Length: 288
Image (cartoon, rainbow, N blue to C red):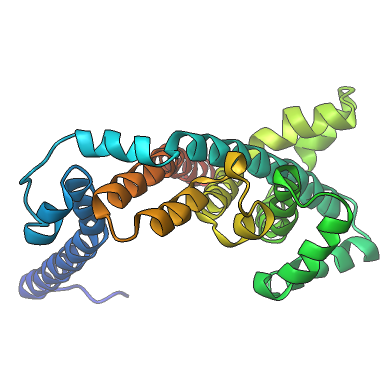
């Protein structure tokens, strides 16, 4: 028989929980301030002259939108954002389609080959990207794909391993009875995947999208090696790099450019985060 607690013991237990809750609140508040402060600092100083940035970085002294407009005139920010947007959308779409189909086929068509393929993708995550970049550049150059479109293929290939493992892990918890029912109703393989399986993968798809969008949008190394000095194909990270070379330490130009560069990725992350939290809660409620 469970031991019954006295009134004083219950009070002590509740008091201990309240103290722990307050300590956790303080810790989370400090972490939140530490996370948000760089963004607030960047926003405040993106609308100020360089003198005001150095003399009063935490105030709104000299605050004016003209510095943001000046940065857009000095740097090809809009072109860089559009190039990064197209590159990210096409690359992430390729990763999602290929990795989801591959994980589904590997799981549903169990064989020695599928098991070997699974371990190949798992081991590929252990290989540092920097160790294969030179042979990769040489190989793509021989194929005539060392360009903007080849860059999409490279991102698609390198983003497969983690994405496949995420889809594979989720699909293992999904019963195949729904797919069998759809096949009995006459669905072909394309209808089976895109109308039955893929909609169930939405939580994992959003997770895969978040990881890969943030990686591709912020990546500098691969676009630098592939695109190089091609001005019309520069991504936003390359535009910021060349802006730093041409403008030196002019923070009144660099800060607004960085602010514009991070706004799209922040918006996308916040939107997708809402959906992934909602799907996790819904899934938990259904399983419960």
